Image (cartoon, rainbow, N blue to C red):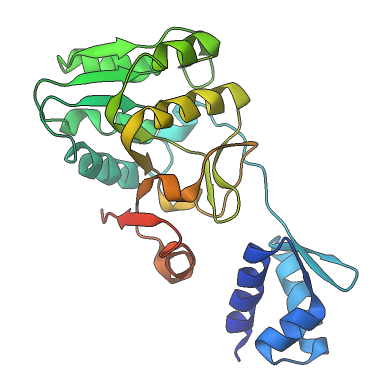
Length: 250
């Protein structure tokens, strides 16, 4: 087995269990214990795991929350393609929830359906939806200055009054074990409530969000369809079959 193939086996084992013994890796890879120890050292240097006595444990970074201007600079073309595809899913006369985020914002120029009612917790989205002459309801609550999103108990209470045909959500992280995550606990509660009120939930996220974990989980992987940019072989093999994915080319 080639080195990269052994790396993939080790990654897969750590996906299922946060701590894996060296003997389990030896059995799975049919490699010698010395080879496995060397592999673990290399993966530790890459920041993918932490070596512990007799094995290794999974290493994951808790993603912080970038500001809206920072998000706008990242993966712009991918977000535009994802937004365009997602907007085409909307049918006439539907009730839609659009979560705060730059990828959901990319949907707005491509929304062509008529007779929509759109609810959002984003001040930026609300402004663009208004400019496009779309019927928009903005949630009340506490303003999160960094992302210009409305969060808190008032936003949740208002959301519980509504039912949505579709909800289009953003996320900071997608992970096989920890699901969909976001850094802010109050924002996580708003996201949870919105998804619970929707018949169909879509998560819009470019490929950089995969294998990332933030502080608060707001949804399990099997609760949504993910619309994303091409994942490549490693992420594709890892996540296809675990969740429903639509990859959108630029």
